Image 1 (cartoon, rainbow, N blue to C red):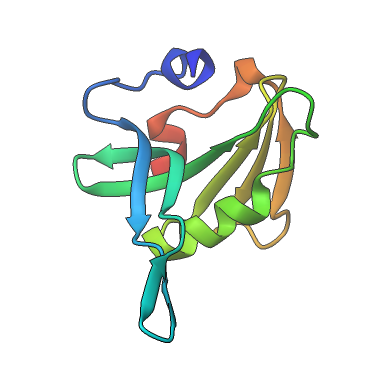
Image 2 (tube, rainbow, N blue to C red):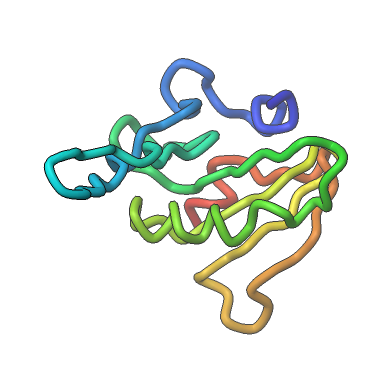
Length: 120
């Protein structure tokens, strides 16, 4: 999270953690119903309150940096945001749906884009 804050985001208005995106599906077997796990994004970045801009999926350091990218893409589809980041704490994989020439790039923690860079 320090890399995200260091890029110029306001912790109170532009960063939310464990954002519930959808209730878990209800599985019915006979007369019993069980709710599956709720879908929650690890971090959602906002341009302004209630205007989501990106999803970040964070994984443990033992995983590859891009381990959470598919999960992040699924959550980005639910949030209708163009940017997805996956991180293991060592760096980020950045998926940019607005750049058809290069959808994914690996970036250093210190190169995390500012809100203005993403909004352009």
